Image (cartoon, rainbow, N blue to C red):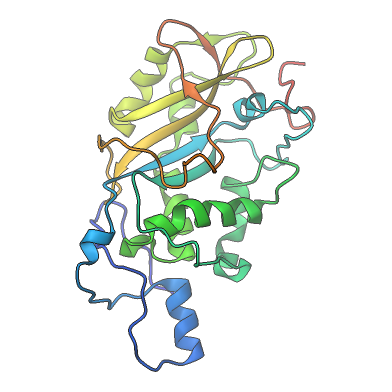
Length: 272
């Protein structure tokens, strides 16, 4: 049976994803692979799990589409009207394992939630391909911590983090809503988000084809126990030269930016 995901504010103990040299059945191996082992006792396991902070990143679909050079690439499913997950990325992680593949069955029980809250916004990439890439580049690096040590756990925790950091509701309650006419400043958004995200997060923008600053995503720095405020710096796992880098940049403090509405029919032209 699947063990319930650990509470977000409880410290997660680290454990390496190596199976002991004992005879086990195929069913046991499959359950260990999917749900993660809980009884690992390996020497020096702390030294292999070097990352201290993890970035939880959500993106606004109306801004994401402005980040793409090719306007035909973007799609926003009709069911998507909210902030979506971009990823959960350990900083300075070394315990990555490209040998750990992910299969559809690993996240099948979460598929409905993932399609709603973590969809691919590219016509050229299915949602499962997106999830698979995120697991390969980032999830396997996080997996040295027990609470992340399977695809199911990793994606389940991401969904719970998105629920905990309900940015759309926080903004809406404060009167900050998508608009083609009204612009916002960073300080306005910080006044709303800082009490909930701490002070170690980044509001990111991209420039649209009118050279306007457009709100793109939010990166929240978390400790391993998923509490806010981690200030340990370093590149995200999988963020090397060979990997896709985010087009976002910190929204300028002295210039307004737009929080554009979602246009499902023509994502690149939210304002017509």
